[in-house]
Image 1 (tube, rainbow, N blue to C red):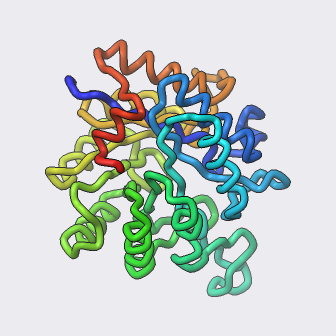
Image 2: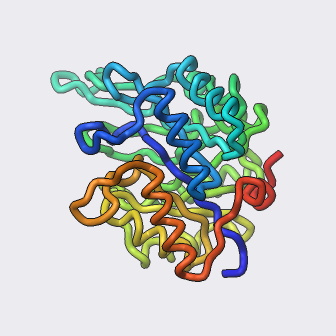
Length: 291
């Protein structure tokens, strides 16, 4: 475990709601502040979604992304910005006619899903390879649409973080690598504990790690009660790690977290207690080969 460990803070996501924890960042100012403060607490990367402040639901509004990114940069924070492209992939089958989109559908074009990445050019953005049942809807990421998104992300000079929710997602990503649609070495994020996706346990993580390309850079995280156990497991297997209010709203069993900073501080404590050293943003840029 001699190499530095990169800690990502996923500050808000798009599914966690304020009813679960009132400390959840919702407005662009709150999200930017959460990212900046996470960096001060030890995170090298901030993974960012934006929200509609009126409904608290996930948003694709470029103006909100622009405000968040500008606030982080104007504050002088050197934290690495990682924007999601996960919004716009959800289909809710209509109850009367399943072929028709029902309320809550966000499914849109691949070009629309990466428009904010092309406009703002963060250092990293996510690229979700999952097609799966999620909640009461279906997340759809077709190979065609992923190919378009990957091409436009590369043209923008942004590093895609390949989100893997199960073994089939990894197989599709490896096809993309073989076909040159993704560059090597690729950065993978292994997502554990989403219902009907990869189970959050050591055996699943060890299997998925074993199937990664030999030169892959990777991280992993768990959600809910498995957030901290999977953080420790990812570190022990040589990966990078993630925590944040997108993944858990608790700091301990039955105890709501005060916010992202408290989660990051606990993550830093776990890694350092196991003998690890957290990478600074500058060190993370060198590890990931960022510009």
